[in-house]
Structure formats: C-alpha cells, structure tokens
Amino acid sequence: MPSALARLDPGLRNLRLAVIAMVATLLSYACALALKHAEHLTLNLVVLAVVLALSLSRTDRASEPGERLVAILLLPLVAVAASDVGTLLAQHATIGDALYVAAVSGAIWLRRFGSHLAKAGTLITLPFVAMLITPAVPGVGHPDVLWAAAIGVIAYFWVAVIRVTAQQTGFVTRPTTPTTPTTPARPQTASRAQRQPARRRLPASTRMAIQMAVALAAAFAAGRALFGVHWSWLVMTAFIVCSGNRGRGDVVYRSALRIGGAATTGTIAATLIAGTFAPGDVASVIVIFIVLGLATWLRPFNYAFWAAGITSVLALLYGYFGETGATLLPHRLEGIVIGAAIGIAASWLILPVRTTDVLRRRTADALAALTDVLTAITTAPAELEARARRFAHTVTQLDEIAKPLEAHRFLSAIRRPGPHVADALDAARDANAAVSAIVTSTAANPDALSDAAVTERATTILKALGRTRRALGGRPAEPPSADHPDPGPPVPDSSLEQALTDLDRALATFARNAIADLARSA
Image 1 (cartoon, rainbow, N blue to C red):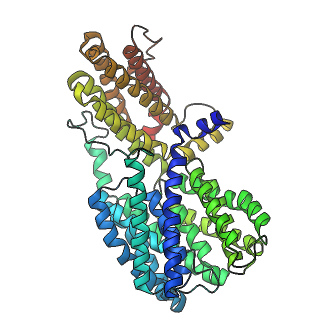
Image 2 (image 1 turned 90 degrees about the vertical axis):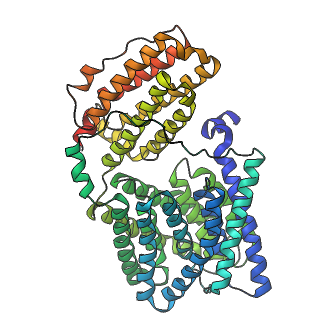
Image 3 (image 1 turned 180 degrees about the vertical axis):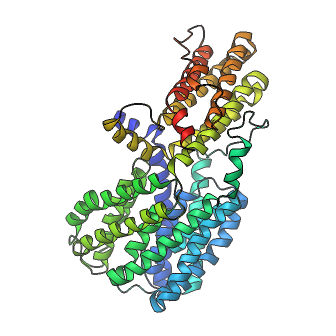
C-alpha cells in the first residue's frame, strides 16, 4: 500500500497541500460559525467562509508578502460587492444577472494587463463563485455586507497563516518563481510576416472574457427558465468549463469529466448517503469535510474526483437544510449537462482559442527556455540551475494542457496510427528529465562543464534546437528530420554526456514526430 500511494502522489505533496487547505478551511469555518451564533447571522456566512478558504488555498499558493497585503485589502471589498450582487440576484434577477456577468468576465479580461492584475482578477471571482453554492439552499438568506467583508478577511488570514507556517516548518516547500533569463532567446519562432497578423487578433484573455460573458448570460437565462431556484447549477457549470480556458479541447475534456464525475461516482455516493442524516445533523457536517478533503487531495490527479466529491457534498448540504438530496440529483445532472453544453458552444463558436495554438505557443516558450539552458552550459555555467528551473516551469505549463491532447492522440491512434502533436509533450518531459540530470551531474562535478567535448556537444544540440525553433515558426530550410537525424546510441563515458545524449534524443523525437504537424496548424 505505501508503494502504491508513493506512486500516486510522490512525496505526498498533494496530500500535504490538501491537509493545509483543510486546516485553513476548518479554522475559517469555526470562526464563521462562532460569528453566526454570536451575532445571529445566516448560514450563508459559514458557507462563504468554507468556499473562500478552500478556493484561496488552491489559487494563492505562491503569493509574495506585498501581494498578500493587496489581497487582504481587496478581498473584503469584493466580498461586499458580491454580497450586494447576491441580493440583486434574488430580488432583481435581470440587474443581478447582468452585474454578475460583468464582474466575472471583467475579472478575466484583467489578465491581459499582466500577472499582478491577473491574480487580482482570480481573487475577484472567488466570492462570486462562492455565491453560486448558496442561492439553491432553502432558507439561507444573504448576509450583512459588512459581515461578508469580515469573512473574507478571516478566510484569507487563516489561509496565509497556515501556508506560511507549513512552509517555515518544512511540511511543504515554498513554490519557486521562475527567473527570467539574462540572455534573450536567440532564434525567433516566427517570421515578422507571420507575427503581424497575430498583433491584430484579440488577446486570448479578451476572447476568453467574451466567451465567459456569453456563456454566463445564456446559463442564467436557461437556468431561470428551466430550473427555477436551482438556476445556479447551470451557471456554475458554465463558469467551470470556460474558466481557465486552455483551448477548445480543454473545455470539452473538462466538460466530460464534470459530467462523468457527477453522473457516476458522485451520484452513487450521494444516493448511498442521502437520507442517512436528519436535517441539521452535525454528523453530516463532519462527512462533508471528509469528502471535501478527499476531493481536494485527488483533484490534481483527475478533475472527475472533484466533480464527484462536490456532487456528494451538495447532496449532504441539501439534506442538512431539509431537502432530499437523492431527489435533486437527477435534476442537478440535467443542469450540469446543459451548462456544459452552453460552455462548449461558447468556447467553440465565439472567438475560439484552438488547443493547437496554445500547444504551439507553450512549446515555443519551452524551446526558448531550453535554448537558455544550453547557452548556460557553454557561456554561463553559474546560471544553469536557475535556467533549468525556468525550463521546468515551461514544461509544467505544457502538462496543464496535456490531458485533452493525449486523449485525442489515443482516439486518433485507433483510426490512424502515427505521429501526433501530443508527441511534443513527451519530448518536453524527456528533455526536462535530461536537463535535471545535467544539473545533478554538474553539481557533483562543476569542472565537467569546462570539458571541450561537453561544450562542443552542447553547441551542436543548440544549433539543432535553433533549426527546430525556426521550423516551429514555419520557416524550415529543409525537412527537420534531415536537419536533425537520430543521435544514435547513448555515449556512456559520463553521466553528463549520457544526459546530453538523452536531451539530443528528445529533441530529435520532437523534430521527427511533432514539429511538422505543429507548424502546419499555425
């Protein structure tokens, strides 16, 4: 069992992060519950505290002290605004719906102005997403706006305190921010003629904001017309499948996982636990937190686990407030299906972002970072480790879009076996493993980088990499496979030479299998 767990979660990193998230969530819940009893407030505040703490634990892991200060000032203001919009959603639907759509889509549009405003946009959406859980709960009103602000501060405080404590004690490692290389990337990935049309295109963040606005507006209209008080099912699903849109394929893949998780595991589990607890039973609250903890831990492995967990949690929540969760589940599944269909339609028909475009851009970033790694080997050995971290970060960004592409490759192989653009993902991972081996070897023997054979080998790979990058931009002088033949068997002279050979092989695989299809998809 331990070995299986180690394979599932190396170093128990995701489990540790889940523990941190649940500790912060439980402390936020306890404070909100104490406030509720002391001030005779609504249970909406308690739900808001749980949702905010859980969401902040997942989205705010790498914030700097200055960003935390801005966040703890911004979040209460946003919570107040969200509370006011929540009141309008219940009392003046048209106005409330319009303001909700404007707030969420506007937060996404902020991403075009840099990473700091992108983080602010993410923070803005959290209270608005939290609202979608509570409108469907019977008897739960909207809290006083000042108490909503207090809950925002409490949730952020506990998330920040628990995270910093965990990092200081070594329970988890602090996320590292990738450094910007001191030398520019040499070969360009596209010609000037190719780049000019791209400048006239709307930025991806603007397109995603427009898609989100259309999807939410349609979800509000359909939800209120078809599901009455449970309109939030459609709106929540449309938001989830369109949020963080990494291409049309990603939207379809997440929609399938959300529907599948809610329809299978979540529905089965919710049916088994429905009716087990009486309304207001404290035991159901304990089960809710257990399920949330498991879903938080398993979410990085597959989103279906999260969808199943949330379905079970909502069944328990409805039961706590006196509604039979089992009777609501079929209708909730219908709402999820319709909401997912709305999200897919918006992402495919409204200024679509192609998955291959995202893959090509992130692949170009990875190859540029790898260029800097190889340049460090030949000219700046002291910067090798920092540049290797930046390359690893770009590979992580590629992994974020991997699953829908790998699923498409699997289905395509049934009909037409052969190279696929997803092969770029495998090559990037292999290259990252090779770069890690290079860093390890040079750390053990720093003088190895001064070896003329190593420098010559790195220079040869660097030239081949330049040809590959130009090919990715659609400017190959000749077929990439002819430029970069298979490097042949590994050189066993040293671990460093072995790592360089592995890197060369990874680039050769990429040039043979993926570069042509990626360049043609431009």
